[in-house]
Amino acid sequence: MKKSLLFLSMILFLINNGMAQTHTKTNFLDKNRFGVGVNISTNGIGAQLAYSILKKSKLIARVEGRYFYSDIKDRDVTFQQTPMIVNGYIKRGSIGFMLDYHPFGNSFKLTTGFAILLNEVNNVAKLRDSVSQGNIKISPDEVGTITIGYNLKSSPYFGIGFGKSVPKKRIGFSFEIGFYYTGFPTLQANATKMLEPVSTKIYNVFVDDSYYQERINILIDDRHFLPVFNCGFNIRLGKIVN
View: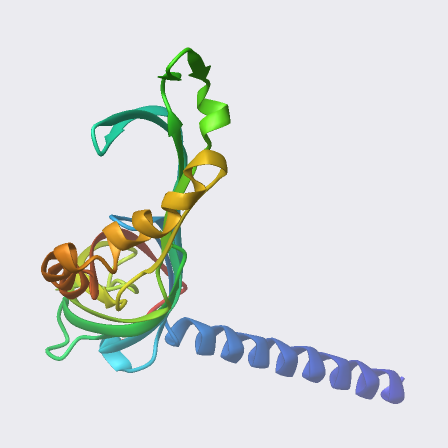
């Protein structure tokens, strides 16, 4: 009987100790301030997971992902006074790691980080109508196509805004204005079939032609930066102890 009581006491002690440890771990997770959020930005729609590193959420680390995709179908454009039809796609987005620093402990924040940019454009253009050379009529498919595209490099990010990714209350909102330092985008331009001889000219119009050089220099300066405006809806997970 005594052995049974001793064994039962040991079991109760182990259970109680295990529950205490579980409670401690739960409090540990609570105090570490996790948060999730969704955001809408000029570079896509996405979600994030945030973690408060310092007390009162003065320093918050977050990983985020954004994405936007749009098809271009049979869009009428004019290229060098020639009516054309364009098909392709526009892709925007990023996968990044960010640090939000709240120097005054309130919602004001300074943000820095790094992101893999998913931004890419690819357009394929062909003549809208057939062309005639003497008595010969040439269809748009016989003339060929022009392909123009670009994509951005992975980039550092800098921003300023208000709102915490791990809000003080259960729910919070945030907005942020910033930019990616992208450098000049990678450009592609080529042509097929009868248009193939003008491939170099097409590329020169965008990059190398001396006539456009001054304007291109301005474009390069402008395109070093990709501005971004972001609004977020954030939810605190667990119980925060300030």
